[in-house]
Image (tube, rainbow, N blue to C red):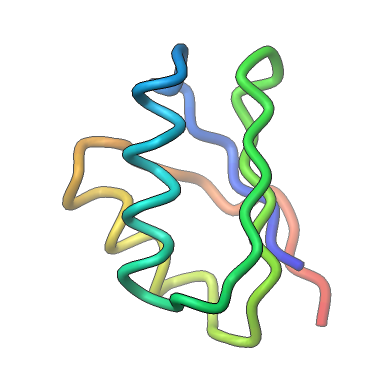
Length: 69
């Protein structure tokens, strides 16, 4: 499980864009978005850096808060 902090995420459209970006890296990843906390949880075996790059490409720079596993 990877937790990202994404300060630019603030609405359902943002959440949809983030989910699509994550899905473009790992279509099997499970994604949970918390708009209030501006955090995204991704359940994937891929390294966090793969997702950070994809998120930045769609305008959502992300910081890894924690990575487990």
